[in-house]
Length: 309
Image 1: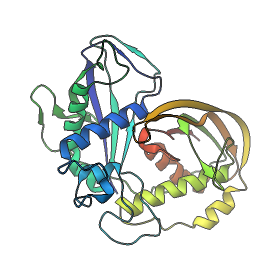
Image 2: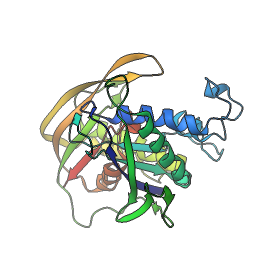
Image 3: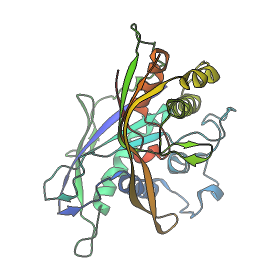
């Protein structure tokens, strides 16, 4: 699966107030800006638009069912082809000149549309972000976009700089040495459903079920197909893994839904948890989720984890 990780570096031009968790703020305004620059017919309902199948906004934010190339797949609907990772520092007040950065992950052929995402973020800066101050939202300016140590876009000249290369994400091999103990830090709220209910605890098999759904759906939609894994066997063996200690807690946060025109209460697990048992075969799957996130609302940056084996 083609995979790109892009860092957007920007500066506030005005004082700003943002919520502690900024993922939903980024996603909502980013989508609004992208729609503004690519929508041709200005149709309120994307599903009824005759250009739905070719429109970048509809394919990114109103993800249709089925594979992007039209082939059939086992999963009913693919995940969104992006993740927005906001800063995790919890800062809410920004002064003029303060940095305002985030990371954008793109999957598959959507890496080819990176210039559109950059232009949309520039437009988002002119629209403003955060709480209204003196009647308007604070504006920011995009300085540059980088991929690793390489500058791929300059805000000063507003041009792409050279070619940007995407990586090819493959399913990794298991570690050479056995893993008997594993600590997972949940850095952004993790929302998992099991038996159609949101989980407030995290048995290992529930975590693995979510990881299998995430990885198989991404590789099916934007890669070369679902990995050839023993799905039922992995889940069965995951039920044998014990929780050594858990320091998880439920974290609630609020976001504004433009679609529903109301404030929504969101929540997810945060903290750390330690598992013991024969964990070796699960490590490749979990290492992928370290990069790709897992659970619900990953487009907001939810479900970011860090693994210590």
